[in-house]
Length: 136
Image (cartoon, rainbow, N blue to C red; front, side, top):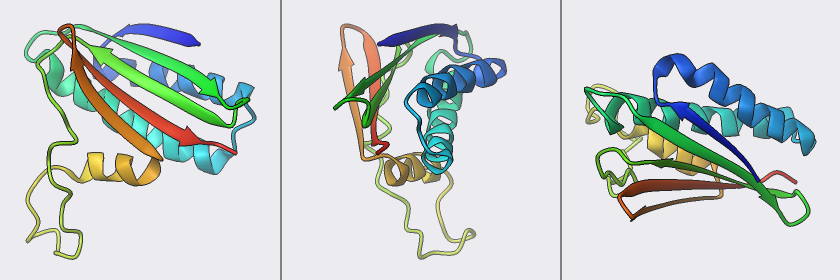
């Protein structure tokens, strides 16, 4: 397992993506799956940076681990910001035009579509969001 502790600011997104991509490369992850994971990582990290500690800032812990001989990855984000379960919100109705649709919710919808599992829990004052993806 690898862990990154980083300040939850938008400016740190590239460092987060480099951390994740480094770990994925060690597992010979395909570029297509890496791009799906990166899109999800970007969405989750930017949401934490934008809302978890607003108007202040705080840290986020990102854990990366593989299981099943490296064929599946688990990436978790832990912050002690405002409690928020992004999975509570209903998926947007993508049959509607962009003008008809409510603002928000599309990012987490894409995360759920790109990952095999997305789980949230609030534990000991921490938001913990875990992404699971089969890479082989």
